[in-house]
Image (cartoon, rainbow, N blue to C red; front, side, top):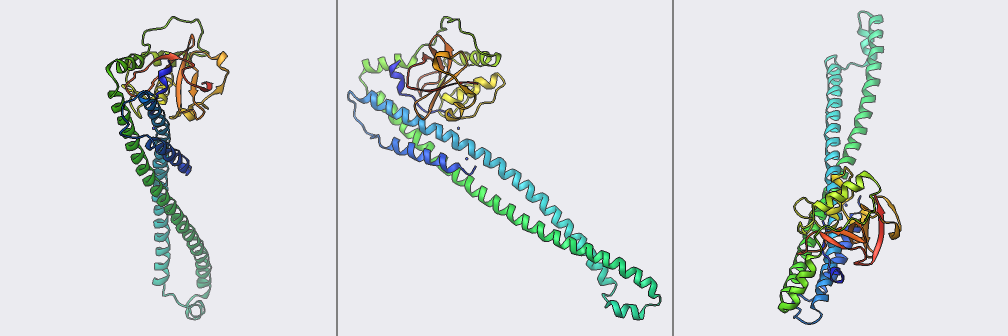
Length: 337
């Protein structure tokens, strides 16, 4: 239905986190261009549509940033484990070198030529000297190993410091943009509340969409996992749109797709932009139940095709998971998982 275009956010760093942050910044700039105190007029619904669309784009960027933050946390944890193991290795090398130094000190550390001169048994001394040479060679090898280990440790610590700093920046950026999206969604809600009763009632009817079971169009899912994902998505009909959520009590658009396919044993990426590449593309004319349909040129919204020209999706705040026409917005791609 045409009024659907007032979509909203969906759920959610290689050091390509900068890309996600740029997208977030651009989305936030678009949001802040909407006057917060816009008065009720004939363009109110269009303004709300624009707010919801901008918020949804920012939300997908937020999801991507959040996913990257999770990767960074795992990388940092692995680096810290490597640092701990390297420190244990260094401590062990130092202990061994300390034992050799102590043994030499206890032997007096005498010059080899003097030791030979005063030795009671020169042959025995020469045997010991040869052994000492081997020990010294081993000691030199351990010193080189220790030096290398210390350099590796310094590098690991530098990487950990960099990851920690990036993670901190990511967390702060995500929190900032989350507040921006929530503020703009609140503005959209206030604009809706400002509509005359008749317009607001029409909006609410449109927002409720189609929840009843549609007739089976006869198209079969291309695989058992696609059929299972469709069944899961249908089980979520009527559940609320929740900003940044991926179930089971609420969803944003990409969160619903991820949750539905997880029920079928398939792990999808978190964002709609990533989900469009989670399989191979097919023409819309060949779409079958379970295919992912992404919308707009930036793939900022995603739905699941269920046959009969219909999709199931989580539209925007205030509208529950529902059926809509597959052509409700400009289609970017159709992906078969």
